[in-house]
Image (tube, rainbow, N blue to C red; front, side):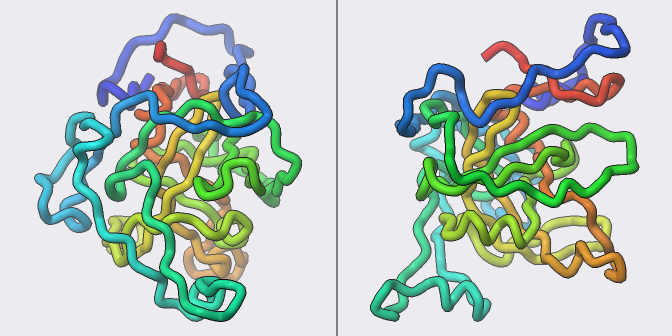
Length: 259
């Protein structure tokens, strides 16, 4: 299995072919009716040389949540975000700074998120034909943890991606989100592309973390797109490390590690 927290491969005991993953829930068991979030783990830190010139390339070690360096959060430039970037009187307001993350390519485990939510927005459940690892994921805004939540039944588990990704249409249902950084350069199958990154609450296998997420443009989900996409959500390496979830490649499931 791929042990993301320790960044190594670990042997797993033989499992029956029909073994199933632990059922996913919307948050930690035993949480009350309202969310009282608190960080309970170190910041899992990944260094992207192009995005973080002050860091060495490669994966860094975990750092203290209060001591990690921060990017300055600035407002979005696109027209749609600018229009939603105003208060009820029409005055321009800045986007919120991250509540939990020091920068992109980081994640931190949280506790205290209420599991129940009356406003669930489900993805399109696009059929997946490639036999890789998927997991059910629930996402929420750190600014409204008990507000609308997005549910993606088959989010791609990608240990080669530092941050998470979410389809634009679903991303907008969580708006507003704290802005982590703008114009970060990511290596993708299509080459180097720039993305803004945002802070999101992510719940997988009954565990919760704050993670950085980028936006997958809605046009990529059109079948006529030059680079069509079927993954409405991607769970990146930093989030897996913070959640302490190992990827069982043979059974294609996530296996919780001891907290």
